[in-house]
Amino acid sequence: MKKISILLTFAILLVLAACSPSAKFTIEGKVSGASDKIIYLEASKLQGLIPLDSMKLNAKGLFSFESEYPESPEYYRLRIDNKVINFSIDSTEVVKIQANYDTFSTDYSIEGSENGQRIKEITLKQMALQKDVDKLLEDLRKGKISNKSLQENLQKLFTAYKEDIKHNYIFIAPNTTAAYYALFPKINGFMLFDPLNNKEDLRAFAAVATSLNENYPHANRSKNLYNIVIKGMKNTRKPKVETLDVPQEKVNVTGLIDIELRDMQGKVRKLSDLKGKVVLLDFTIYQSPVSSAHVFALRDLYDKYAKNGFEIYQISLDADEHFWKTAIDNLPWICVRDGHGIYSNYATTYNVKEIPAYFLINKNNELVVRGDQVEDIERTLKTLL
Image (cartoon, rainbow, N blue to C red; front, side):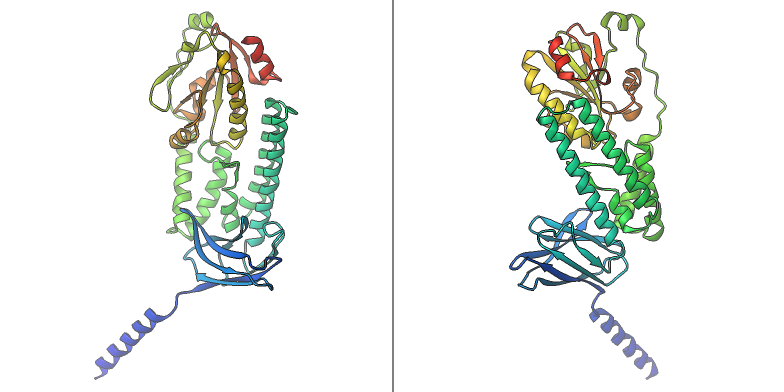
């Protein structure tokens, strides 16, 4: 009888456990000036945005959502139209947000999210950076600045931003959701931090990956970040490669060192085969945030002068071959990739110190000038054509 009683009690406990609701978190608050607008709660997962819930705001602008509590810290966002507020769920059950529709993404208060305020600060810094980048691109389009000036100013902006973020949000507290969030901002679709090609950026990723792995070793974000760091370590470790053998007489005759690399289709493309054209030899990394502006400037040159015998021979030093192939899919010039990445023998031979780097080659296959020696590349290009 006692045994039956114990079994019955155990069965009841199992039923109660099965019926008990899973842990929930609540996001609630008020949005002024948004009557009749639809507000959405979305999860920002590794695989992309996942809609969770939505509701129509009344005149008071009050809202409340409830969702399952994540097994490890996760990221969510509130959205009205194209206005977004990002936050994380890490150590609380209720998050409260107060905002106005007109300034929804920039001027809001958040309570209950341990890292919500820091995520807001990072977002605002990124928005300010994007605004500065857009201004430089507009100045380039209007002819107010040269391509060289654009590259220099972009590099200054990105360097200052990354130093601020790394020291004030990542290295200071790598175990927080704000630190993880800080790793992945994009400008014009390009990641600001490049752990696959940049050792300093890799250090920031490694710091957060170590903390995540200690606290949440089985979380998808932990595994993903760990894999990025491992790949970055392999790519930025200087490989043992043979020194490029360049016959001295060949350099003397052609005036440049020939390059033989494969394009996206696997075809070998030789730089010397372009004799008879004016060639811009360009070393770049497409995953760099500077890349979009650089490609824009090259596209402008190519569209203007390709019909006059101008060609671009662009060498990618990207570690990620798939990313490179995706990035160059619609580019009209010659695109090749050096699998040695930032340790390319060709880049070393051409004394490439920073990316992007470019050189002008005349119709006789003679190296005429490198990019950092010319203020106005278009003017110099015209004299060679």
